[in-house]
Image 1 (tube, rainbow, N blue to C red):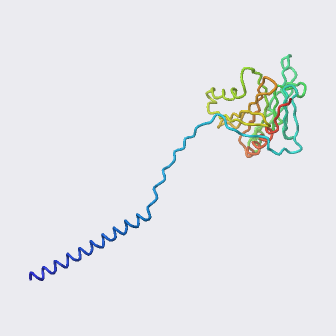
Image 2: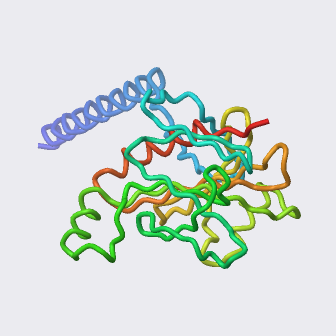
Amino acid sequence: MRRKGFAHTIVIVGIIAFLLAIGAGITIASFAINKSNPKPSPTPTAIVTNTPSSLQAGDFGQETIPADWVSYTNSKYKYTLKYPPDLELCELHKQEDGYSNYTRCGNNIYVEGQEGLGESIELSNQKESFSELDDETVNKILNEEGLFKVGVTVITDETISASEYANNLKNNKSLKDTMIKEITVNGVVGYEATIPYYYSSDNYFDHPNQKIIVKVRQNRTESPKMGEQLSTFSKILSTFQFLD
């Protein structure tokens, strides 16, 4: 009886030893495989810090301008540009008689004067005053066409440069998010000021021969034609040049 029980015990021990041997073999094999084919270490996620740049380069002047575009030249402040024939151009003139001679141009009233001597001009796709239109027509214009205006204004402040003027916009609390970008238009460096939540941008240039700043602005309202209007403005700006 004792021999039989002893033999039984030996069998059980042998089975356990066999199983342990198999387990050890599997462990060793697994270690060898992992060593020969190591798992790639996880790539750490890069943390990108956006450092705002006050001036970034951009270029205008490579646009193709349609042959039917109209040329405008301001002989007083020595600049020129071209614009589409479907936009109406108005000039604002200063007069000593208190702006008595005026004419309506689109949504604005402009003082009449000698052509090409305006202190500012405006190009607009809206040739009628909204005050003369019914609400249904106005809403249709806003929803389908949108308002699109391009203005050129002369700033006669001799104490400040175009760069300083553009960057000073950030000092205004409501304009603190203004983004300033350096641009080049036909060889002249300018500064584009864009406010993220406005559909407009201002472009400031130092006149090379006069102590003035010339501001070229575009305004538009939200409409299906916003992209087309922005492209039109880019083309208009690309034709802007100072004269000798």
